[in-house]
Image (cartoon, rainbow, N blue to C red; front, side):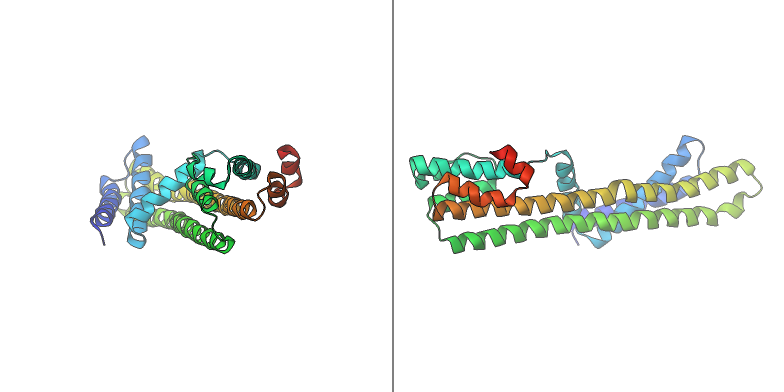
Length: 251
């Protein structure tokens, strides 16, 4: 277990235990104490089950998928048709120098420029999809585990505060604050699970499926350019990936 993971575990438990020793608090402090317990306990739990690097990667990719623009599939088709036009006019070797921020598209262009065997392109596609699926599945797994841990930690917090209730039975104010703190931990755990972690996992699943689909478009387009370097033929083949509405707008 690496230092980052151990540090995160100790910090998480420290925050959770610190919340317990702070007591129920009053007013807004009661809500803060409950939130500290849930966040600290959930962080400790996820770092016990996953490497810290996977957790940080999951949040990084999750945020990226949340703010990323939704790229229509027809854009990928248009790009491949443009490559076909360039290779027809300037020769396939011209694709070696194509400028793009998309590393997969750059790889596809180099495979075309190198006149690569279509079977090798299919193998490259399989490897890219496998790598993409593995990265995203790890991140999805992190968020699903967080969605399971958060309500459980919240319930644990509620039980922990209820155990302390007999000590304040003679003080109605302290009893009321303790009940608020106890119930808020369960509420925070459920809110984090249902409104943050599960939606993040769902978003990543959608993002992963869209990424795999576009990889298929890109590499099928590369094979089409090598087999028949005709933009109209390339479009006719790749149009099968599009819905009827997208085909109409892409024409």
